[in-house]
Length: 289
Image 1: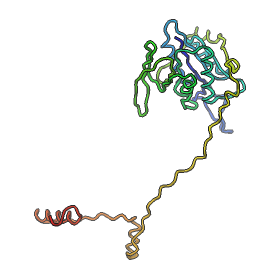
Image 2: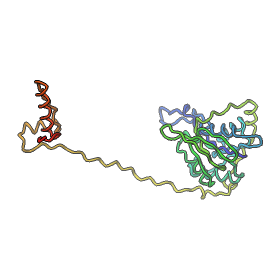
Image 3: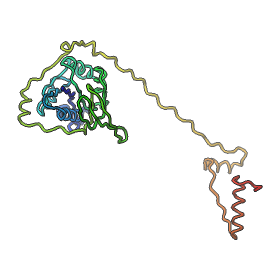
């Protein structure tokens, strides 16, 4: 079985600092790391690998993105591949998913694609679903646990408000796992040295049979947000037939009548008659009764 893992390189939030003079991010102090959810996806792929299986790590980015592929090689990935168009600085989810799906077709479709559910940068979680759409495969998002049984994957995924759901999907499929689904193993020193010496294969657009025009997706049009309509509020108007001092009292109390009470004393029979009379005055009892 062949398992493909999609990785991404992101700035470490702990190292992002803002220049106090210019107000811009100081790029010289920013360090880059493997996206946590992608690290969990890589660990799951390595755990699912059986003797004879192969795990391939892919990423979209410039030469600087080779670092995440070397991290994958250091922990045990069998193959790596980087996809990029040199004239680009960044990519949107539509472009990233198209490049990854086309690279998977060009290199030979795997049996399973594992991705991180979302990145720390955007957090939209669109890429796994878009890869599945481009490949025509089913997609399962927010996976917490999974197990492989022949050609079926039994999974548990996270729902809103702490809920959980279980299900099965038939391979081939795309799985998007949560960052806390697994913890990436530590790389050994021989693995790190071997990864540093490895050559990272790169595929450009001509290698994938694509042209820059294929990546020019129209930008979404955003309408100017309109403020919500204010709900009409009822304004209290005092009774015009009342004298001025009573109208002023209604205005200051906003028309809310003050609670009034009456203390009744006497024998129990008299108290019972007073209660019945009060209920009859308020319309709760029939006076004839």
